[in-house]
Length: 195
Image (cartoon, rainbow, N blue to C red; front, side, top):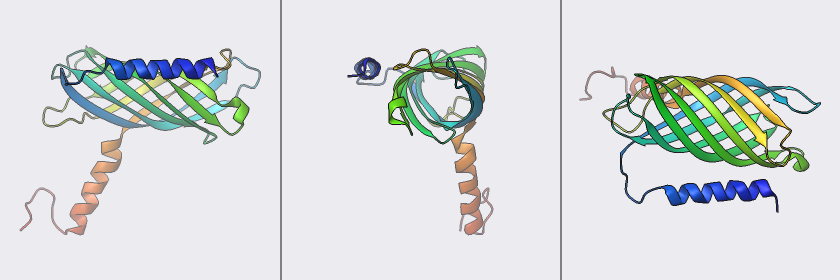
């Protein structure tokens, strides 16, 4: 059995064991569409990559955007629409400037590629910075960030990828247009109550 796959399973099991039964702090969810460019490195077949995917975290910590927060992270990605990659891990929010924290995440998972021999376990590390709000009225926090991410193929450690780009919040990309078209269909202004 692939050692990378065993390591990814052990990390996932450790994260599940570390999650408390009851929430010890306030939770904030964030989900973003990821798009960027990068390159595969460490091998002779260097190529430009188009990075597309979804990234999400649930952060636990004291209420407010000036506090250190930590929680589980999910990363789903495709490179050039030739792969399907998923990884689970942990993320840490470091409140450097109020409303503009640094988010560090590390995760492990699996990459399915067109060539079955190239499929295998991966490790992903990401650094993101940008606007990330704390929602005092709900559990969803908006985020617009720039990121830099590195991926190592655990079945071939000399092969890795570095990508950078932007993360656009899904609530703005999906939720706001939905609310607009819903109010348009009702033929009323969104700030006025329905009769």
